[in-house]
Length: 258
Image 1 (cartoon, rainbow, N blue to C red):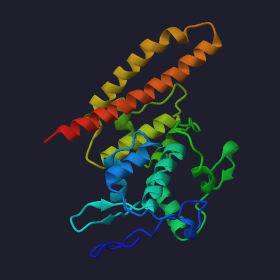
Image 2 (image 1 turned 60 degrees about the vertical axis):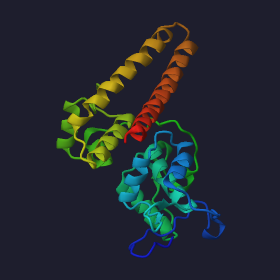
Image 3 (image 1 turned 90 degrees about the vertical axis):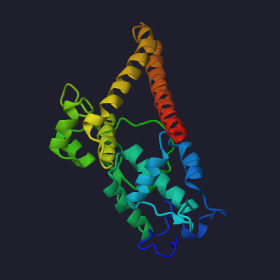
Image 4 (image 1 turned 60 degrees about the horizontal axis):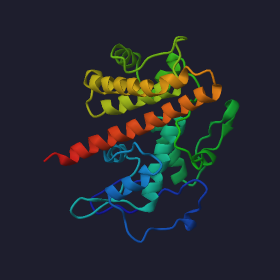
């Protein structure tokens, strides 16, 4: 992708895994950031314009700019963003590791292998084409492993624990969801948001958990195992809908501001 005049260090065009450069279909028209958001939300319902701007600020994608400063994204830009989001969602990779993957792909090389089932390594190209909006549970992590995977310090983790944002299980380990929470809190910190600023978010999440529990609790206590399994599936669906509603309300509220 060529940058407009005055822009230096543009990221090289991204060729998705499994595609050769000559087979990439170029869009007849570049997309606005709003159109990119619509495309990405089909697979990533929680993605926001702020998230896209953040990934641009991290130089993971560099859209073209019109003379008036508006962002214009190509198909390669959209696929590059989807790759980043998929690596975060499915494999909890920090941005520095994803940047290494993209650099390898830009050079025409295979990206570093990712942990596969049973600890074996598998190529990232095989993983990125696996669909599915569900958040995988992933391996359990010890404290030091969580710090390394999230790219945070012990002091940061301690602060987040004191505010109830991150918590270990009874055995002292952390699951994939807690790792995702840690990474999201770290990303918000890049915008100057401290744990004390996120107490309202945690309180809202606790209220939503209570609401879901009210609905599924009678099913969880049922003797029939299939009914209990249905309760777990219902809880996941309600949680997903709640998150999507929350994001939609926030975005609608921000658009309504003068």
